[in-house]
Length: 325
Image (cartoon, rainbow, N blue to C red; front, side, top):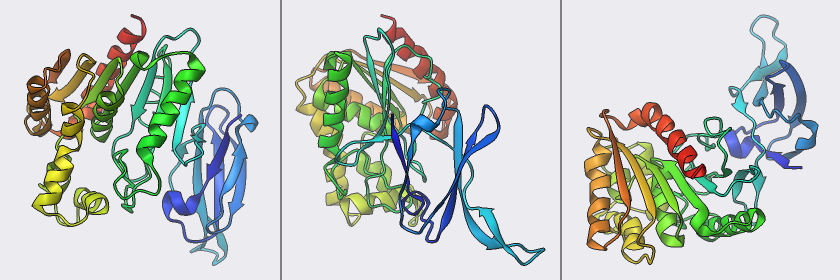
């Protein structure tokens, strides 16, 4: 069984005693209420939960009731989906769902989120592929903890940890790298392309991926924006040298890759800036390095937020098509 760790200080920066509440959505009953002291970690054995795994959790803190003047537990967070999260020895957090008789392993990377979480778990719940979802909360950027699954100013060796967990799972399900589908949108799309051309894989499904990381994070945002905050936490001062260095991260991997024929599917809005600013430069570098088998899937939307509407059905259809091949 999976041991689930709850750390309200790390997750939500709760700097006081709090109460964990776990709700069974199927029965609408509370499974657990547990007081957690500041900076403590509470470990919960998932064998206490039913197989449906339709649970939510939230944190509460003590606040004075306006009417009675008495202290009572008050919600500090909204309900979040509870996942059977595991953690590697190095600290990499992930979900693993094995499917009987599947011949593919889907490795999903998350997008940027103020509270790092897993993407598309519910969407792909019934897809007949083994599924490995890898969280990104290893960076030093306070709002998002983003590392882009890279080793720039992180708490541990993220890249090696990602490689190790993929190798471990492949061994467990008796598959090879050619059976891997790397996938993700936005930041997750960057990571899917990065690890595919670094490690080799059978397939990539990338939605609106960032390619020129420095350009994306450093420009076109307010000074106090999350993008610039992430850039500074990873690469330091925003200057041309650091922008150029971060722009080259993915391009260098592609240029030096020995894997020239990965089945790559890139979804992006035709009118969306990621098409001209990121996908087209990627296609140019791929062409210059004789990298083949890349298919563009263009849809009719003009903002990056359009991914939330258009990418999920494309992702599901493509995963199931590959999984059934």
